[in-house]
Amino acid sequence: MAERRWARQTGLKAAALFVGLAVAFIGLELLSTAWLTIRDGRYTPAKELFANTRNSYIQDLTIGGNCRYVDTMYPHPYLAFVHHHDDPCGVPGANNIGLLGDNYPVARNPDRYVILVSGGSVASQLSQIYDPARRSFLEEELNRNFVSPTGKPFQVLNGALGAWKQPQQMIVFSIYGDFIDAVVTLDGYNEQYLMTPGLGVRFEMPAANYLGVNPIIAKDGFGNLAISWFMGRIAGWLSQGVTAHSHAAYLLAVALAGKPPDDNSGFGAKTYATMMGLPKEIASSPSAYMDWQIAQYAKYIRMMNLSAREFGIKSMFFLQPVPAVDKPLTAEESRNTPDKSYGARYVEIVQRLLALKERNIEIRSLLDVFKDERGTIYIDDIHPKRENMDSRGYSLIAARMAQEMAANWGWQARPQ
Image (cartoon, rainbow, N blue to C red; front, side):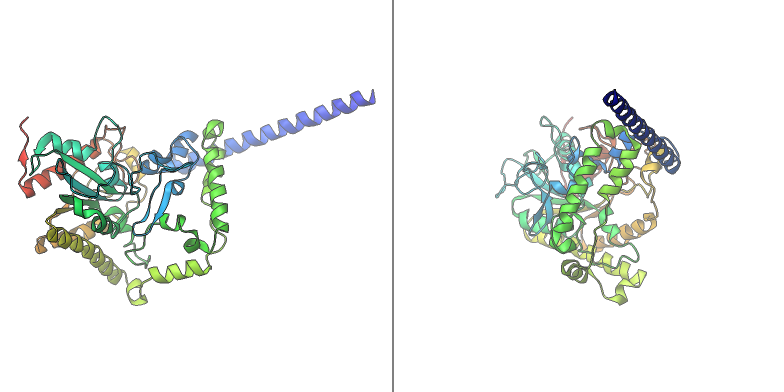
């Protein structure tokens, strides 16, 4: 009898505990949902929130798993960081130098007119291959409408990567430029960030991905790297399965993935900060800082142009469109681009760089490429919306770039 009473009491306690936990979780979920709805001004499903924590370029590379973007990266001795294709978090489409697309050759291909496209993630998405039966946006545009100078088909070689900025474009061209016929860049957005007033760092400072693949530089050892990896894994697991539909799980995942390091005082961090810093007289003056950074940007464009001429390679430099300038934004685009304050700064950067035309450098602005578009072009703060090979934004960019190259370099239109 006593044993039966004890079993019944234990069962009741367990049931009460379960009900209490269930009520607590439901309450937490309701509070999380309410807070996020108030924050965003509308209700957003948790699965959509998980997807929106990563821009479209990163989401493409990490979808379907719990790998962080940095887990797909590998340190490169000259290019700072590239992708790898090894398990468990490698990118299957990474080529022999860690970029996305065709393998890099070691000699010119007499059967193709090869154009190297370099820049950040927008340039990468424009020139990488998504469908094995298709080619990139730019390559298809060129072959559909123009005849190359050699009469051979165009081949667009992806020389871009997410978060890259000058001088990475110049470096990849310097290393691999001896087997191409032309080089073009599409950049500006990542570069303008280095001109944010008060940032006070050298223009050459690589993106945070560099620190992610070099933990000693980042924080002073591997301890924080291990913690970061573990937290990132938990956040990744929360974005999968049943918890992918929970707003409370979303808030927990964001908190874990964004956990700050415990210490920034290690020798690696101090040395890196010193290397990437600028003298106070430049860093403390917004105008002097802007002048310095734009001069560095222009320097790398000039160096690429000079190298191209020396080796008989065509070159053209495109300044990419951004949501903060010229495009009439839809409600969706406005939500995805909350910070448009950089617009005036970006316009100034473009205008000052266009002065390089006086040095006979072929530089073009694409700021107006979406000015007549009333529909949604941007899916996040910079990337055009894309479904496999269907993208109004990338198609417009590819068409404009192809037209500019053809007009400047005298390519013949392909008979239709």
